[in-house]
Amino acid sequence: MRGSSFFHLWCPDENLRKRALLARLDLRLGGGRRATRADAEAYVDRLARQLDLTVPDLRRLRRGAENTGYKGLAAQLARLTGDQEPG
Image 1 (spheres, rainbow, N blue to C red):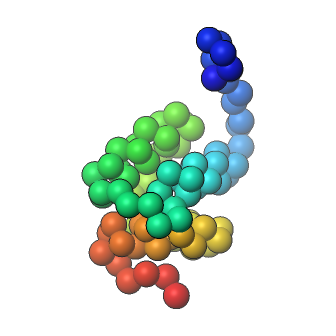
Image 2 (cartoon, rainbow, N blue to C red):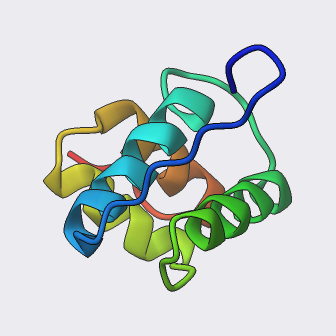
């Protein structure tokens, strides 16, 4: 968004869009921020659809966050899913 205009770029690289999903989720959910599971799932759903991605479940996102170094996001997703936090 710039002023009253909307600017949209499209990236055909699905892997890059997946990394963008994780980066945006990290900003919203990582770093000790508190969210409910329902809020996180709704946000994931909205972002994935905006990025034209299949909507992943939170456990799959946690594994992606662990693999790409988003430790705060991985911990938050582990908390929301009731899984053991990554080590």
